[in-house]
Length: 162
Image 1 (cartoon, rainbow, N blue to C red):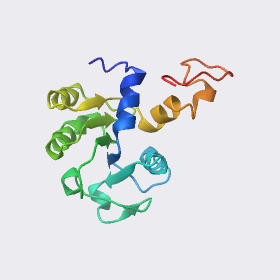
Image 2: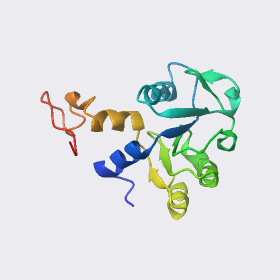
Image 3: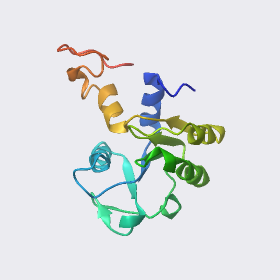
Image 4: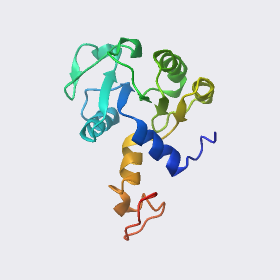
């Protein structure tokens, strides 16, 4: 798979098939991107499990925080990674072990070795993207600012696949 560019259909399928998300590196700090993404995904109807060993047992956006993926109360479809690229491989190995279907690495996070391990195990992989941004772009929620059209424009563009 070419991890430099993803087809909209690939991203859309992942977002449509995903119902449960484990967010590794979730933060209770309302100024952190992981907090915004967690809150947004909850508002869109996803079940989100924050994973952060430093906050285990506490709550973020009303959701109990878990120390590890192995501690989650049920299987998840997606593991969303808010950690530095060099820390991704062990997270992917744990995602494989718990039966996740997708590993999504956030903006600025890319680890080709981890991606290969995940794909070899049958998981879908997205790197250097944000599910909040992609959801908004593909649903036309933020298409009005030109993101959906891939160029700056004041005109609305139709959603892909709509």
